[in-house]
Image (cartoon, rainbow, N blue to C red; front, side, top):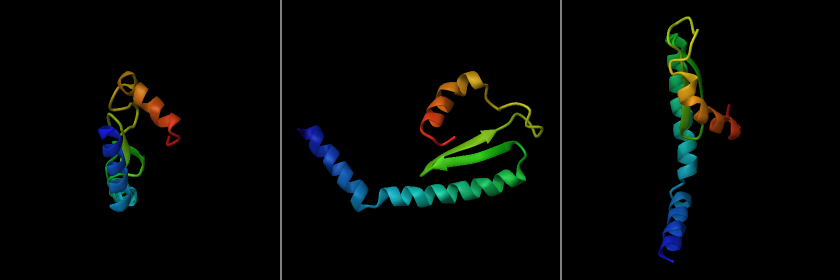
Length: 87
């Protein structure tokens, strides 16, 4: 019962404080700033996201020949990202 009351209070806080709208504004600001940085830094590829959740594609070097992190380490997260429809 306490857990339900806590969950309802959290949902009220999210709604009353307009947290979803704020996350959208914050995310757009972050993506815009990182997009501008990506134009200056060759090792940054795509910048994307949803709300305040932001992803940055990084490369080993300016040739963009290889990812900065091996696909084996990021594969499960990339699959989740694609299932969420944000790839």
